[in-house]
Image (cartoon, rainbow, N blue to C red; front, side):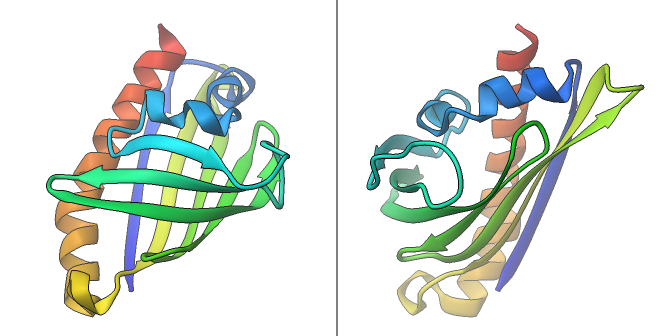
Length: 147
């Protein structure tokens, strides 16, 4: 299993950050590895929402199956990955500077299949590949929210 954790401080309230993060279908606007999102449920918000995310990292393309497991507007969004890569993920929004700014944290515990290197692939893929991509994603989120 690979634990990946990245965070960024955004010059906006948690409510403003949530306005951008809440529409799951728009995550492709700031996640460089997310190509398209296809909902598998009629609901598109909240716990129980299920979707497929077409993902591309370099030459590797896969479909990430996810279900929202936690939904606290302005505070947290959690997912369970049930596709090729399995595990859990969590976005947390923490107010800083008396709520005028937000610390946005993204934590994931991922397990890669054997054909993506298994445990070694989880370590290399998580620490050396995904972590830098997700840092870039957070810079994109910051630009989108602050812009």
